[in-house]
Amino acid sequence: MMTLVVAPPPLNVARLRFVTTKDSLLSRLTRFGTTGAVSHVEAAMHDGTIIASHIGTGVSRFPIDYDTRSTLQIIVDLPMADMTGKWGNFLKSRIGWPYDTPAIAGFAVHFNEHEQGALICSALQVDALRHCGWFPVPLADRYHQISPVVLLLMLQADPRRRFDMGKISRAAKRLQDRHSRLARCNLPTAAGHPG
Image (cartoon, rainbow, N blue to C red; front, side, top):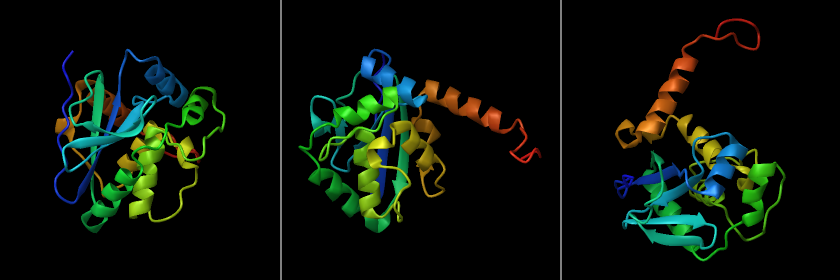
């Protein structure tokens, strides 16, 4: 299996890395519960490290090339200018927080559980983006209920983000092409008229 590579982001850019792996039960359960292609999100930092929340380690800093198991990778760049420092400092301030195991179990069986003071991967990233001002208004859902796939959809819909096709694995490219073809089908809207 080829290792998927991620580079540190350019200056004034927050880089999020969405991934999944085929050989992890937790990854499969997350994809099943969220019906999405990704099961984890983490931040690529300017110093060449990754800040992520994992079961077993909680929020930790890892070498940028630590992940040798992921089979799909989508990189989303968020141009932040003056928000980048707040974003990075917030993520660093959460290192050492535990993993929110009840919240991740909730994705598989659709219940609302959460351990106060603990974070799943997507809640960590949503919290950092809200803290730095990328999401300027309160969100409609609790952070621990926003899955990696929902966060990816939120960012894909945001015109400020950069979605570099050169950094997407072949599987993710096929998935995006499939969604593009479906969008061009001109299916009727709720009112019964073509969209």
